[in-house]
Image (tube, rainbow, N blue to C red; front, top):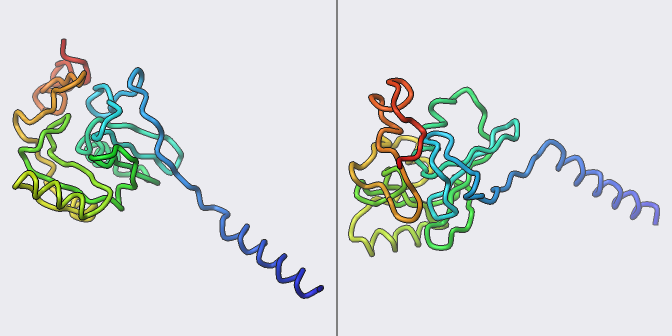
Length: 185
């Protein structure tokens, strides 16, 4: 009996110790009334293109397009990112960035014209590519080496996404006194 108690106590202690220091990050819900993209300052829609990341300090940033999240990571390279989440294009379910599969084509429409759609698994991404008869299957590792060019005229202007074409350009926006981050009227 004494040995059984000791064994159970050691097991419980091992579980507690193994869980220490490991923070579990989860995706936060999108609030369309208040959430703005950290890069282009456009409304983050509660749709298949919404993405987010959480820093090691626990601050969550939301973006309207995966390309905006990438741009934030480049601009904030010294900030430790603890978790990243994308949406499954078909179900809008939140999935971890590194677990997702991606479909890319410069002609795929997305809020800021990066042309990347995320899927919960490789089979769904491939099915989408096959249905479109174009596109490239990618992983998060592939995206690390991606060129992140935007397709001209491929912004998804549906719904209430209202984007300023100059929000990401070097010639427009805050650096030249333009309307960077402002909704186009």
